[in-house]
Length: 220
Ligand SMILES: [Zn+2]
Ligand SMILES: [Zn+2]
Image (cartoon, rainbow, N blue to C red; front, side, top):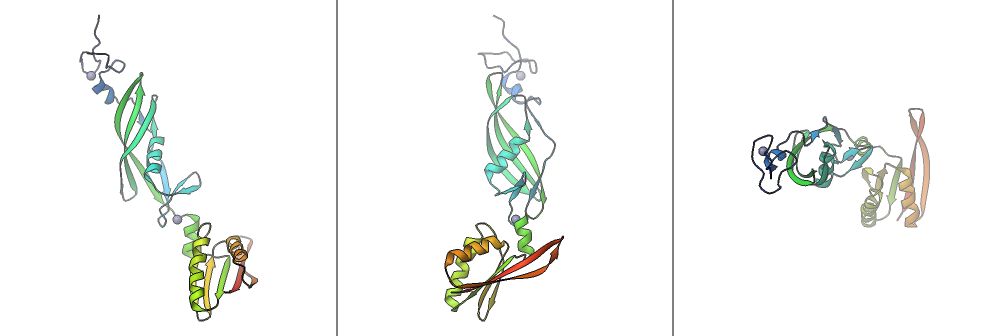
C-alpha cells in the first residue's frame, strides 16, 4: 500500500493521522485554515464599560469577548468549538487568545488564535444623561430625615433597573431625586401609595421638542 507523505515537510503517514495532504503538525500551521476579517471597531462606554453590538449595550464578559473574537474568524472549515484562553486589554486594544477546534477533512484540529479587537470609547446614552444631570422628573421626598433617606435609597435601586437617578440633592426639608425618565418616576410614585402632588414645567425647547420637567412632591 502506498503511504502518504506530507506535501509540506515530507513526513510519512503512520496510521491515518494525516489531514488532507498534510501531516497533523503542518496542518495546524497551515495559513489557509482561517483568516481574520479586517479590524472591527467596537464601541465601549468609558463609564459603565459596556460594549455596543448592533445598537444594544452589553456587559463586558469573557463570553462576549470570545463570541466577538470568533465572529472575526473566517474559515472554510467548521469551527466546532472555541474557548477563551486569555483576554488582555492594553489601552484601546483587547488581545483575545482563543483555542479553536476546527473540523478539517473530517478531523478535529486544535489551534491557538490571537485576535485583536480595537475599542473606541463612546459614552452610552444612559451615561451621557448621567453626566449632564439630564432629568425629566424630580422626586421630592419630604418627611422625617430617616425615612426620607431610606426611601431615597430604595427608590434609586428600583429606578436604576430601567432608568437612572442622575442627581441627588439633600435639602433641609428632604431629598430631591433627579430621574432621567419620567415614566419610570411616575410608575414608582403610583406604586408607593403615598400622597403626592405633581406639577409640570416647560424647561425649554431642545431640537424643536418641548422639554418638560415633572416635579412630584411626595409626603412620606
Ligand atoms: Zn508535514
Ligand atoms: Zn455607559
